[in-house]
Length: 278
Image (cartoon, rainbow, N blue to C red):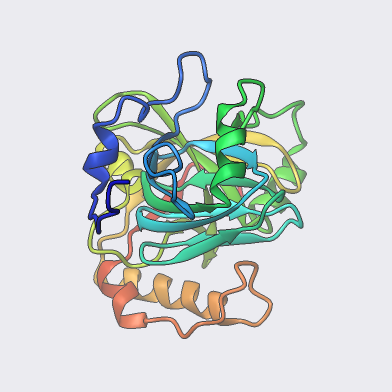
């Protein structure tokens, strides 16, 4: 038997495999390939591979095996079957227990490494053509027309919304889930500080048109425009207000860590959403 060797891989090794792209007619955009499995090593005690999800992709899945997902790039939101939500950033790991059903949303393009097992259970599941491992989750389109008062209440109370932007390179609509913030009667989009600007932010700088999709207390789509906040004093005031909101014990995002105010001031995106009825 050939001696098992220590190996090193990168995501480019996975991208070069024939099975990297989703199968024809899959209806979803999840890319991935196993680099360690029973197919490549009969003695493998786990499955290891890389995966990628484009910005705005939303999928729902359940597996009969345990899986660990290590996010390498982008921001991955995982909505669990008990209605909890985890926001996973680069360098963070999420554990998906066997037989749990979870929804995955790529806030921006996500790259990740996954480790799964037992490998025999993984192999049987992967080889079953009837196994719908990934189910695309269509974006809600809104039904009916809520009255203006209901929309105003939602704009001042709902926190989790979707936005649709125009891809700066593709020209195609890009939908993603995001938090809506309020300060001084105005509406804002922002996020954790990062050195690399998020895709949705760059899309809106290139084309400020967007659709805001309310989906909590009402379901309605609202056209709007994004304007970057460039005034230093206004930017700092708004971000301080947002951070004060996030630091409250009852904040909807459930943040418990101490927030890096200097980092937010220097490296967080901040766009005001105008044209909303509120």
